Image (cartoon, rainbow, N blue to C red):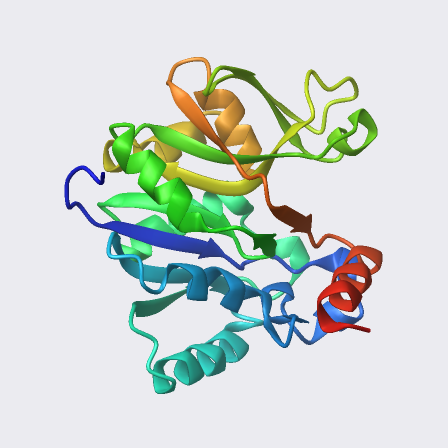
Amino acid sequence: MIIGSEKMDVLILCGGYATRLEPITLFIPKPLLAIGGKPIIDNIVDDIKDCKEVNRIIISTNKKFEAQFRYWMDNKRASGFPKQLEIIVEPTTEHKEKLGAIRGIEYAIGKAGVSDDMMIVAGDNFYKWSLRNMIYEFINSGRKATVCVHDVGSVEDAKKFGIVQLQGKRIVKFEEKPENPSSTMASTGIYLYPKDMIPKFSEYLSGDNNPDAPGHFLHWLVNSTEIEAVINDGEWFDIGTLETYHKVYSQFNGC
């Protein structure tokens, strides 16, 4: 049963330059690369297009790839996409200028005027489950901060990700790419924050804290805030390298 009727904004992070996937990402932003016959970002927005709790979907990108995302957005609207779509453009044109993910989140929150509950999704996420499950658990839990995690299955793989340690559903520890992981539960780069936590991003950045990977914010937050995990038992892929992209592309395109 769903409790309450408050809306939420979904912020999809597409502001990076994906240098590890060059040369293809010199011309095409990673979230617009195709898997299974459509852009990666479509896998995210089509998943939540019928979710009544979602008010609008905000795409955060940069000046270099602004035109590509506006073209994509115009086509989604023309196809009858039922949700409000917005684009926020960070004032950067190359990798060395990038704001970093957390500063980019704060920038988008300010520009879009986010004041509702917020889901944040890394735009290169490719998964085979539904974000709606996470949204429903978030609402039914009383809107606690929530992180989607996935068991990567091995300690060696865990070293490549942000890793959480759980007590029941509660996250009690977070480590970014640890040398000696305490578990194999990796953050997937999908987060849900209640509206009263939105100012925490500015609070975090007002200190001498790393403005990049969202996991740094989670590490800072976990000691003072109750954060729950939702486990993604389906397939999940971090499209971080050309090798991984080719592997996933081949798997879902029948090549």
